[in-house]
Length: 153
Image: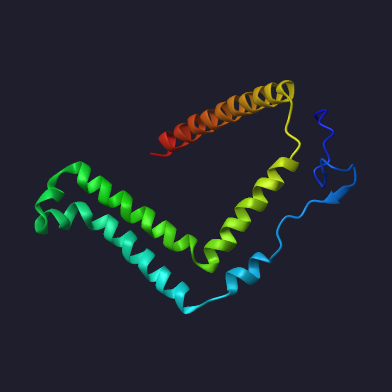
């Protein structure tokens, strides 16, 4: 594939040439995600209430609070509630497990051998050609079935 010879399973330190294994995460994501506390339940409840409230801002808030008639006020309140909900979710054990999962996914993406420009162009033309062939076949089948149905009716 590409001429990238980087071995991302090991990383070299700047002080020595000794290679140490790359640690993906120190804690098991499953163990962290399964851990539940009372604080997690409260944070989940707050997040759910904030998300539901953000969907109802433009409908109900202007009835009770005059400045909420302004569209920018409604957008600001909705954005604030959504951000508040995501912060609440990030503070739960499941949120920490998700952050670890995203970090691990980033490390795995660096390990991917990406195609070269020539390979990408070649595969793109192959996909376009197959799409044209399948499109013609579907068109021919459509014409055939229209003829058969027209003959029956």
